[in-house]
Length: 260
Length: 209
Image 1 (cartoon, each protein chain N blue to C red):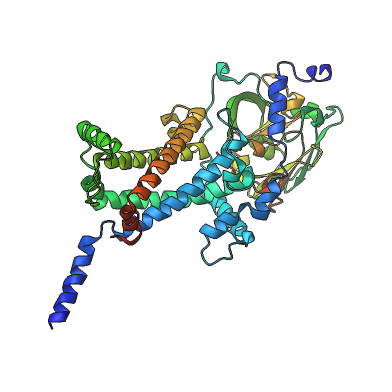
Image 2 (image 1 turned 90 degrees about the horizontal axis):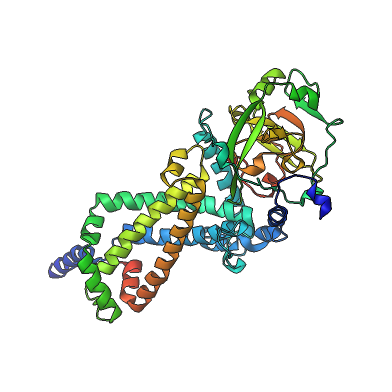
């Protein structure tokens, strides 16, 4: 237990473990593919074979794509996520991942470099010190998890749109795709309009302190207009691209736009 | 000639005898399907991060895991919203809500509740709803509107921020959404029970008469 206590001062250990257990990938996930959808095949798809759950699954995938389009349509690039006073900050702000905090990436900030790839003029890698020198802004916004819980946190960093401008990114491209240092190679695509949203941030600090390991040291992408899983932590590279490259959770069925 | 006249009268008489018009029946059953899909997938989503100290049994959830539940919820949502909107528009436009559900007086409700509890509430004329029915049906329409509004607010708490503000904040909208679901489930139990006790009402909702 003492091993954990030095990691993040002020983080409640019980809450932390509870949250991480809750988000562990569940073997029953596969049951969705196997049989969870058969009721829908029975009731929704008249004329379909009732045991043919793959047709229900296919239908759900199509509706999800349609929902991506609907969400992109109603996305207003000028609509700001609500901000809160400091007193509203959730303490402790929960650690949340599909693994225990002990298994979180332990990045050495001195060796770490942010790789920049794809449709950008300047593909130079960025050290942490170089990023710390960029102009930064703070925001106190609500993080909403796909599970339904939410927490208000204080984030400081460089607006992603400023950084994209700085590196000469082609902002007509469809996505900015992030890759992370997580053991399974967490990654997630962010549509360009959300990437250019004024509150979307390359976060380097939490509550005015260097971003703790629990929240994604050395850098996370804070997107208050998206659900939590579209806010990648421990980011190691970003790629500006027109290709949809999928994502860790997106590939397992979470709606890809997942805007809020 | 005589037989033709009789046939004509029958044809003309049929619509007048329909207790539940076709549009009510179609929308009712689409709604029943949509509600069941929404409730079962909603329980799956609830289980990912329970608001209270309990989870719904896995056998009564839809989708297999959180992503599946969400996919179902956000697919059936269209069915529920489009059907619900069509129902509201038609209900107001045809005057059916006014004719069938109004007036609702406290004394009338009290009288009919007492009659229902002593099994003296008549169901001879299915075209006229008693006060308990009026209150329940009007109430459940209201709850339906509330659950859709809170649901939309939770789905898009940034883009539809005004909707979230209407209910206080995001966590409050979650609770309101949950209690609306609970109200719908309670209604469902009573509704189905009464339909089974008065089978001709179920028949009317299926074949119209």
